[in-house]
Length: 348
Image (cartoon, rainbow, N blue to C red):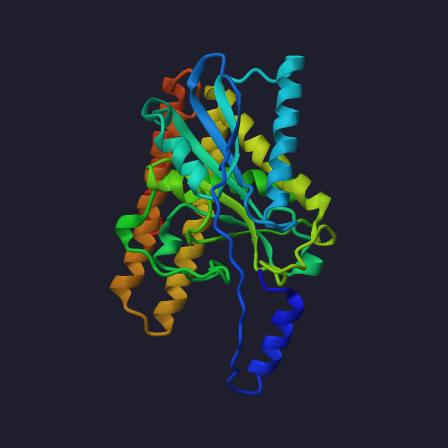
């Protein structure tokens, strides 16, 4: 780590011209043991199907990533208490994982191929406790690759971490993006918590899930002016923010490990509303760009890709109920798909 004071001095010097540094480095190489902590709540109906949370422990900062580790620990404590009291009866399993970033999560997925088949969702908690009045930045959900990762426009913006446009072939239709976002927006209603998303960028514990074809999301903050400096201390952490993130994350997980068909049908309605809102936004963006001289074929194609994306997303929702999809759920999905596919949501 570079100290914040040293960083400030270097930036000031660089502003005046080229800078030469003389650096003395002391290193020590030794064998150490890398440990991963795994806590499981076993499902009562389908214990082999699971939701996995991960938080990496190797970063030394308060926000990066003691805030993620601490939030996940509290989520595990609350879950255990709810199960022990009989108030939470999970149909599927819920796993909490603490370890080295990417390495531990990847190993958890790879070391047991049978277990990996049952991992249905993964979510990483990274820098989730920011007091943004001090650190800057905002809370973000990094989405699985959707069309905004191909065409980043309108309110969609990459974080300062940075990202490059993905090919259309990288798009992964799944309800997880909108489901978690809706839970966060519900938590934020009326209390001033700012919730935003960013297109896929990678770099944290959600990537091993995605690389294994498992739906995976990242809950985080960026940017943080104290990121990877010795000023990332406890005074930059907000307990209120940690609570907002923890409640949103845990509500999402509990929903998915207990869902019946009634719940799934309600989620289909939520998803349809999100889809229609997005399609209307893309239509307006397309029309505005056409007035500026954009290529009509290209603009129409973008809207159609979004339309197909959400139609495919709805199709993935059959796996939500623990006991399997009912005919009523299937009907709700098909009805919603027809609404989404209506030509009124096209530019041609």
